[in-house]
Image 1 (cartoon, rainbow, N blue to C red):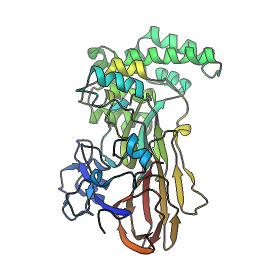
Image 2 (image 1 turned 90 degrees about the horizontal axis):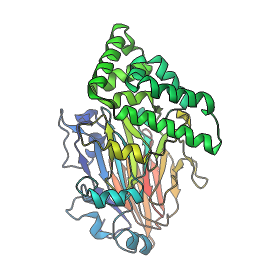
Image 3 (image 1 turned 135 degrees about the vertical axis):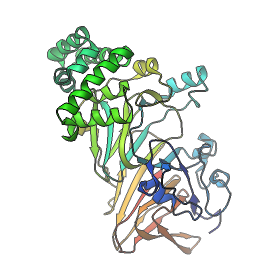
Image 4 (image 1 turned 45 degrees about the vertical axis):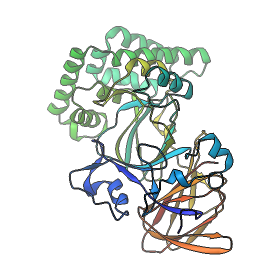
Length: 422
């Protein structure tokens, strides 16, 4: 297999961040072990596996020092994408293994990203937006968007420490608006609802540090005294977040943000200016090729609370509405399409037993990773058929327009995820 073949196996870089799962418990480490040079260390956190051309972790042609970007051209990317993205892939594809929560965060839209990059280039490294999609590989937890307003109102009553931190005046203002128009779809009511939700969130994020610590101590003491930390639900979640990030304002975000639990194959899409945080589990993730993150809690990193409060959309609604299940792809039995409302990427998931499925050529480039099982990947080039081994952890770049046949060998599920752009 040469560097100019239509399908090229890649060597991909793992990233070690504090929140990653340790050693062989990490799905990232398990998949990275497909590279002969990788050996997992027991107490090292393996958080992310990067697949793409991002300069902070560029992929290489397997068993060489040749960067993927150097072999990309107007043929295997398409001339349009090659020009539009300056010879890079339009997306960054990842696997994540999460042991403890990532920060409460949002990603700026393109206009805000350009402004932040111009003013604070050391913090916001590029002028691009960063929409993301995550698909669960194992049971997976996340915060995403704001809860229904009635749930937040109920939490102000059920958790007096939350109410005391916010203060009675803001709490009552929020409750009055929710009672008046919390379920209205009228444009004026929606705007008023978002205004009072913004006030509540801003008040929490800007709360006095001493008051924050006092109320969080009261809450954790009450949870422990009543044995609620072992009962699941919000009490357990709050207790766990405080253990991971003691006395952090992000712990109280559990009362404001939807807590979603995904089963393997379920997904969430994270649009610009929407609050979210991954909490635990393993997933594949795809994003626009940007590094812009606006953080506000559950992190020792720089917190840009003012920017976050100003940029959020303050959309709210039930958790179930945030979970996506994908759609059948072009009548194929075993392939599911996850298609977010952006141009940079979509994702295919193919899951086979002892069977075969052919995916016709996609108009743009793609990157495929095998996440479990053993199989084969087959393609034709100028009349010659090529069959490659495709085992867990193998990653392939697939040129635009190349039809691919995947075959499961029947010794268990053979599952792959494929990010692509057209």
